[in-house]
Image (cartoon, rainbow, N blue to C red; front, side, top):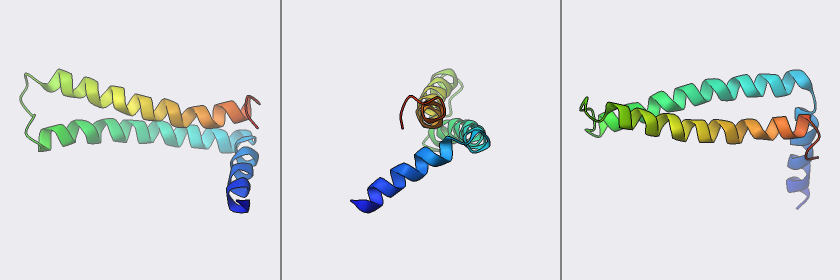
Length: 85
C-alpha cells in the first residue's frame, strides 16, 4: 500500500513541474503518431492492405491512437492545472 501511495505522489510532484509535464506531452504526441502508423501497418500485415479499405483502416488507427494519446496527455494536464493532486 505504501508503494502505491509513493508512486501516486511521484506522479503528482513530477507533473507539477512545467518542463517535465511538457516533455511528457511531447513524448505522448510522438507515441501517438508512432502508434497510428503501427496500427495501420498491422492491418496491412494481416491482409487488409487493399486500397478499398485503406481509408477505413487509417481512420481506425488514428481514432485508437488519438484515444490513447489524449488519455495519456490528460494526466499531466490535470495535475499541472491542479485539477487532481
